[in-house]
Amino acid sequence: MTKYILHYFPLNGRGLLPRALLTYGKVEWTNHVIKFEEWPSIKTSGLCEYEQVPILEVGDKKYSESFAIDLYLAEIFNLMGKNPEENYEITNLLMSMEDFLAPINKIIYAEKAANKQELLKKCEEKVKFFVKKFEKRYVDIGKGKYFFGDKITLADFILGTSITAANTLCENKDFPWKEIAPNLEKLIKRVQENELKEFFEKYYFK
Image (cartoon, rainbow, N blue to C red):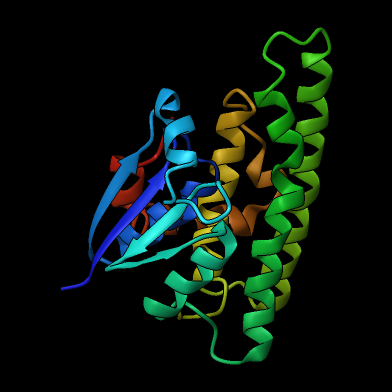
């Protein structure tokens, strides 16, 4: 049996999706949570190709770059789309996470900043902006059981984890889902109560 090891910090961050996918895949995997004091030695140990994490070990091979890892696992667990158009939508959602999470990351490193409240306001505005865009995409596609009808894909994992993580990082603000994205809210709740249930119970950092 293939064994998987995911190396990442005690954060959601870029370890969010790989952990969710590995949990869903029901494979044998180890969640190696790197302590921050361990990082300097691990960084230069040869484990990390670009001296960054996450790193995914599969057997004797190591995989780097978080988005590449996400897509790799999606292929393994049959979570890509049925055609190039669906794969474009999935990849577009994945790449949008860089911009979606950028203002949130500023808050993480601004704990004592005098303008933290201003940063939180900008963060909330940015999150709402993206959530509205995600809602429109979902509705335009057909607002089925999953993002693409009856087949669960990486798109559902991206949306089911990232927006919740954004709320957590924005000091657990409860965004008005029914006003901003009522259809998406139902999709996310459905996936979190089913395919993502074990992940949120065991591996999500609240």
